[in-house]
Length: 179
Length: 289
Image 1: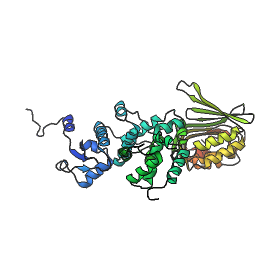
Image 2: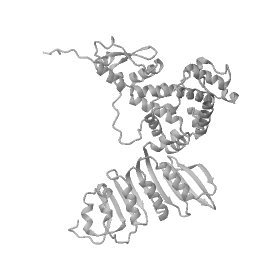
Image 3: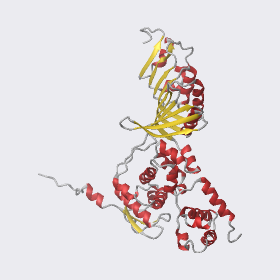
Image 4: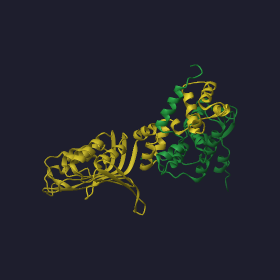
């Protein structure tokens, strides 16, 4: 005689496809939905969710405003977090140099112009997403490969210290509207 | 002046940044920019929207992370970009796989840092610096050569070494200091002493002066040093037991000091903690073992 299990067997994939969802509102009022596993990649957001006591029942009714991140960056961040939500936890690094290969999907995601990338880094820093920060830094580091200081100044849009000083002097010499 | 500025987007951005730093309103800043560039040279909407973001605007811990992604050559290039990057590169802790210093038979000094090999040679009054990179095939490809007029090759070597070893925390997998003139060894020692935490996993110190060997060994942070290989004069009896008394020695797991000098067997108990050692004792008996 076979005994039917009392609890229905739920496939792991099924559990993954029915996650708890949270709503996030960017600085320019775009609304994003993000799963619990994905939002956990952001230490800032997860701390906020924990402190606000958001649960599966009330999560969607209480959108989380993120004033420091615009919709464009938030979209990239949500995509990233959803993509990496089931990644295994990073091992503790004994070395300072983090040895990892930047996956092609992430390289494509981060193939944006420099200024957008710097803004994304600021957003990532604010939301405290370790993995995305590592990947962004790798992309910026790759830009510097085999470049001369002059080439780097052009790539990064940084003037020399002398140019910087000269611009500062010329700007301070011109009287402002009040002066 | 205004014509040059108006065609240089970087200069315009810096003028905008300057206005922002002075906490001037968008209207005031835009008016100042128009005065500098000439009217109608820059659109008000662009001024308002210009986010002006470069790596220099990133938080210092992020800059440190970016610098951490760079290899030694790219670090040195980044260091020359601006004062901010210089201070970040100099402060950021650094990890090298290998650092080796040696004097070649022709008198030139050679330093290996990771995959890069740099020669410093004195030719007349000038110093010739040649940099090569070791490829995966172990082939050494010359990447640059330059001549510094009226400069000593020793000064140039010490200057570069001091820059590479400027960060306060340095982790080196393998340090190898081969015989170099004593005066240079002393200056290298000064540079090593300036490092707050020099963590070396494997140290090979092959100098001709026992005191210098011990002083150099003492620069390495105890606990991180796993393997020690020291030589100074294989036929000399060691006058004292300072070598085996160092914390670096006590905390190592593997020591090769068979060419460092002849050790009195009364110190053999100092070797008991080691997983592996090679040493030369004046006498040895079954009881000692």
